[in-house]
Length: 105
Image: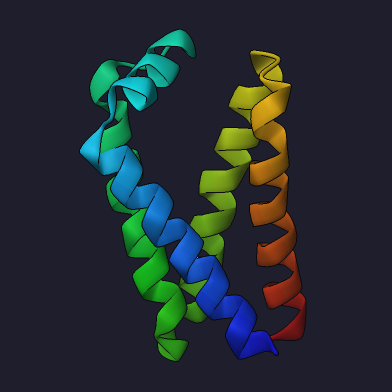
């Protein structure tokens, strides 16, 4: 079960990373609305893709969970600060998955 959760979490971070790194118009607008430069999605996406890779390799699972926690904590702070409550549910799902994997590992 834990292995499946790790793969789901890695896939979610990978997909989010690709979307952020590509920098769709909607994504760039969101980052700008939150006070970040338009290019901010690229390094965010790269970090999310790195996180996905770390989660897949068991030797770096703890590092991947740590990086994922930092990414999601920053996202949650941003979303709450700007009252973007519609985006809180996906971020909360990431947080629950990270916590679940962490506790089961």
